[in-house]
Image 1 (cartoon, one colour):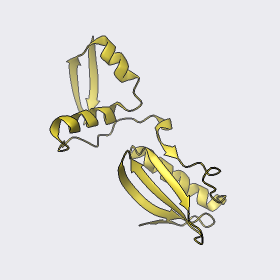
Image 2 (tube, rainbow, N blue to C red):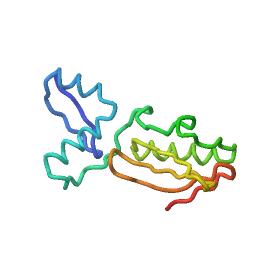
Image 3 (cartoon, rainbow, N blue to C red):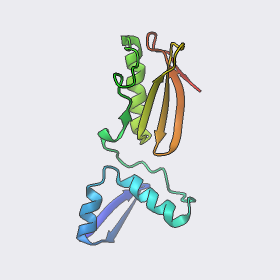
Length: 133
């Protein structure tokens, strides 16, 4: 069985066992898998990492407002949070953690891809002001 992969805008065709091809198709993010394999093979010096493959929509974890006891967002803050989630998906982030600190009006957020922190900032739950740290 032949398999085609589009990676870093270069099409590569290679022959793989059909069972391996089927297993790869089940992964939610094939690009992240390939990047990890290249990093492991090249010792974290892979120049083609951070590809632009597709990520399944459900691969981004966002904090649960009820479980984290976060304050209710006003309509003005919902739009910036929605844009932040869209940005996170484009950046292939895996985690958007929201946290409310006692005595602080703003929500702190941390955007990460696996173990790598991509962005840290604050979101005002009433006015919607978004500030990056």
